[in-house]
Image: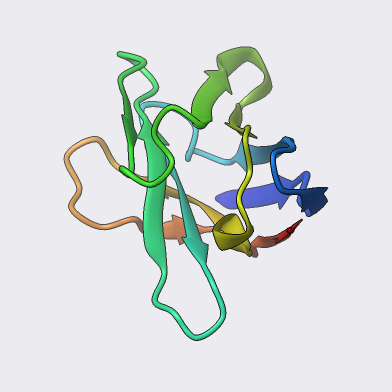
Length: 119
């Protein structure tokens, strides 16, 4: 059964760091593109970052570029989101998601993990 499980959320002060993890199971890991999204209260869910498994190509939203870093550990079937220089506006529920390499939509989603940044 395909599954994504996030962990690592919590409370941080502005300027601090957090690292999120997303463990993939089932057939998700092999060749899939993994991404991170977030949704703040009262706002729509937005793209944060993504990474391909074979090529290691990464993509970032402008708002997090140079502050966040996505990476993966193929041996552990896990993708990470290192978040540095956090800002209060980074407060949101963060979701891990997966799609096929040629797919247009993310078809698998985790349950989400809360990140709260205090000023």
